[in-house]
Length: 224
Image (cartoon, rainbow, N blue to C red; front, side, top):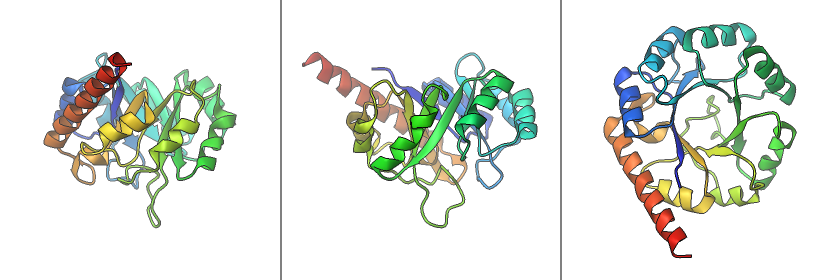
């Protein structure tokens, strides 16, 4: 099993370099003013250029209009657009048509019914991201460091491609992978020493835990 691993909310060259050297398949840059991980498109583009071709570049937006997306796409040249707001299926189709880029649509999950919300997007979004619903009072749609009931992922059709997000860290990632069999994982606050501040030591520990989980999964597969 080889997981896609996305490190999101990157803001420094050192963190970008370390993420990719450790094995990140995706690096995410957040364009949302209320987030402590917010970055300007020009700055994100310079960081992305350090690892372009070695990891997929993801632009994370929240209900962005075309003017904002124009600047982000121009400055960052992302490989993927991640939509983390309330974008409708029609809006997703429009964005794909305008920018010619694959879209990963994020959904917040607390209970089984939340997973049904993806149905109108199947065949439209290229991939899904499942995050925990924000705690009361939070203005951030993601990056809150809270998890949801991972066993809900078994309710998904097996053909749904997704990344698992929400409260993942070095201590729980093995359980998350074991319970969900997720093809991809996304971490942000779980590798931070403070909101928006990536901790290289925590990043290393996270990747070590992921590698151990992959070894355990491989061993379990051989034993069946």
